[in-house]
Image (cartoon, rainbow, N blue to C red; front, top):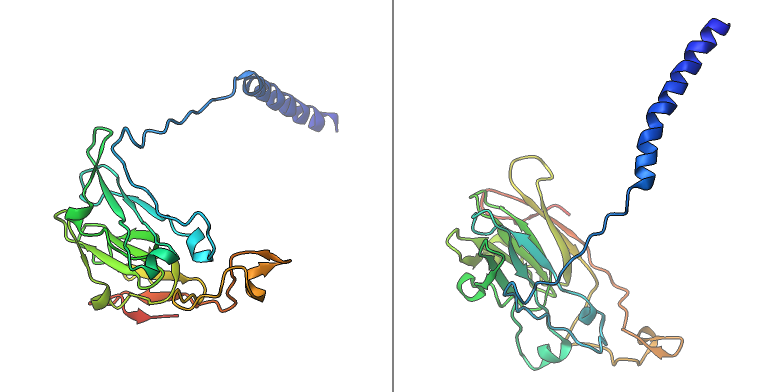
Length: 244
């Protein structure tokens, strides 16, 4: 019996000895400090996200989507900022501007929104990127407080809104979205996440009513009716076949 125990003890002892130096090194090593510096303005990014400070309605406390992608295939990540609106801006029929910034490759960015033609997307929420037509250039899908937008990358620095032809302009309140080839057919499908039924033209009065108060305190009005999500199957001509 002793002949069987000794080798086992020797093996355990050797293992412990091997671990000790590594453990001691880990304990004695100083913590790694990571610092970040805000270089937004120095990099030439002037985008300002529009929001309502009061946030009386839940839709005014959301939005702010952003995407980093190489839209011109030059090896540098560019930035697309999604802007939103407010209830007051909608009622006064004013617009805001989303922005596409081109990465110059030297730490600086250039606003190319007007050339790209993707500044006016309405009440934007989120954004997802994918080459839905397999032409080698990433396209953009923006979710909104209806309708959404599918922006096809033309490969020359411009985009075309093909939402209507692709039949993916959900008129409801969409928040998140994702391109995914769920059936492995080599074509990107689109999943769109909807939120609640919200009509900006038929809003309850803030702080009044059962759904706009919490223990007598005025709060953002809640909506009980939730919307269904959509999975759109990519076809040879569009993203128009609803799966769910």
